[in-house]
Image 1 (cartoon, rainbow, N blue to C red):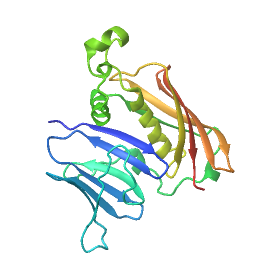
Image 2 (cartoon, rainbow, N blue to C red; image 1 turned 120 degrees about the horizontal axis):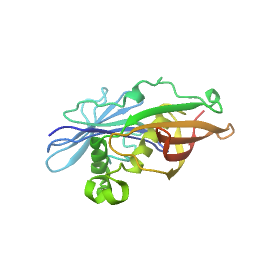
Image 3 (cartoon, rainbow, N blue to C red; image 1 turned 180 degrees about the vertical axis):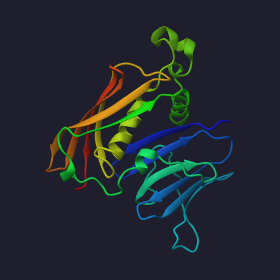
Image 4 (cartoon, one colour; image 1 turned 90 degrees about the horizontal axis):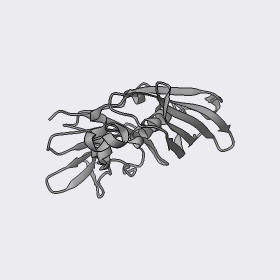
Length: 238
């Protein structure tokens, strides 16, 4: 079976999770968690149970935790989780935009009104299939061309799939690593389809130094056509 990759990145109140999904053959899955201080945690599914183990270099043997990871929104099982990477045979898959960032956290004083960040993605059938498999959203509008034809002229991408790329942009570029999303207000304007090249961009429209809150407006466009607009509020630690 061919492997297909899909990325979902989310900023939550306790950690930054860069999540990479890979469709896999029928075999057990391994998830690697890399903490801020360089420790590694491995979550694996065995035949009859799920175990999460701490492979800290200072330990003589792994520690076992009672709760397994949740793939989409994992609790901070290790206390300071930075990345969650499911992989086949412990093969590391990483988010290229995340790795290109300076490891130093962005400081509020470095931000300016009007500052922008952008990224361009191409919607693929594999991306849509991966999102549907991860979330369980199997709405035929995204998978059945005949069903989707009368309303949309063919299958369309999940709107929230594109929102995930906005989350990645906020987490990796602007405001960047260390930022915490407080709210996302999204309006869907028109659909994106397999093969579409979508440009996503955000702009800082308000800075509140006292509470270190950053408000950004963003949009996703296919050429001149607006697919969605978004308003985001994020917080920085310093």
